[in-house]
Amino acid sequence: MALYITGHKIPDSDSICSAIAVAYLKNAQGIEAIACKQGDINPETAFILEKFACEVPITKTSYADEDTFITDTTDLALCPDDILDANVVGVVDHHKLGDLTTSTPLEAWIRPVGCSNTIVKEMFDYYNIEIPANIAGIMMCAILSDTVIFKSPTCTKADTKAVKELAKIAGIENPKELGMEMFKIKSAIEGTPIRNLVMRDFKDFNMSGTKVGIGQLETVDITMFDTMKEELLKDLQALKEEGDRHSVLLLLTDIMKEGSELLIASDDISKIESAFGVKTKDSKVWLDGVLSRKKQVVPFLEKTFK
Image 1 (cartoon, rainbow, N blue to C red):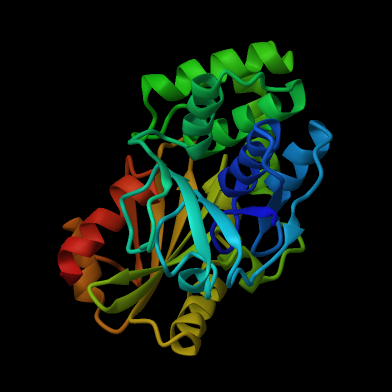
Image 2: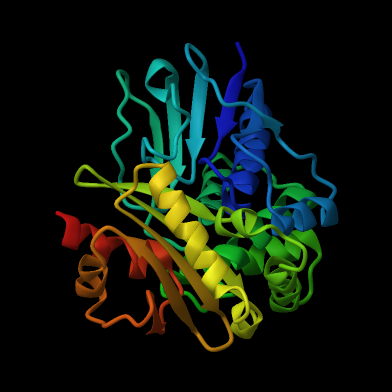
């Protein structure tokens, strides 16, 4: 029986690259493993995989009765819908501990670092398995993406160390330069439907029984969204109603200004204002210094909804 490695719904670069890397590691250990994804890859991830000549993982959404290894999440809302019917044999994640449970002991790698691929690098080191240049390249890029080229408050010394070591293996002399190239591709929005933009990096969260969706668009110039904010807000409202969500939020993150504008559709916007200690105007507010959804947004909302 094959071992399926998969990340979260609406996969980002960390989710995809960690699934590929863990699958390679498990195969090197003599375990037949297959990298999977639950949805389409985004433009940044496509660029990364093409640059380092890595195949896109297969799409697989059902894992009942399958041996499964989860990467980049332990939240049931983000795992495959039938994950509780799967045999989860391992997890690797850098987020808070979620509500995924297992009936038997499992291999668990959970660390407070900026990216799951930083932890996957530790796995390779622990098992003394050599990382091929192309796998090292995609792992490095995922870390650069998740840590916003080391600017995110989630970034740790372990992340910067991993990038330095992976860059050497991959033959990349200037990782930060490659990171900026990635973010320019990530920022590309011309011709992209509004719903696709909102869902490009979107996650649903269960906050004490309340469903809250949070998307994030990272860019090197936030002004590119000036003419479409009203359309984005309209789609957030539609998404809220379609998914029976209490709130849907979208972070427009400017990595150069090091902050985010928050767009909000909510049944009670005062809860969102209370979470961040701000007053909104026209369902929008600038959050200075906020780059990380994981560390600077979700925890404050969870306290408000608790």
